[in-house]
Length: 49
Image (cartoon, rainbow, N blue to C red; front, side, top):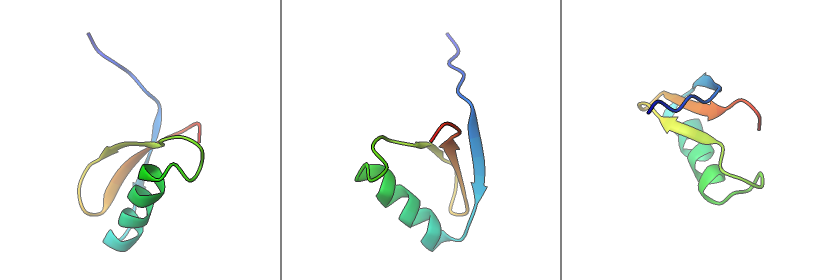
C-alpha cells in the first residue's frame, strides 16, 4: 500500500537542518513535522505545520 503525504522540500545548511530535527524531536511546535530527512542539506517537512 502506498502512503501519500503533502510536504515541502527544504534546502538548508547542515546546522539549520539539525535545528529543524531538534525542534521536531522535542515537539516544540506541538507535533512532529519532519516527514523525511533526505541528506545533509535537504529535509521534507509537513505542509500543514
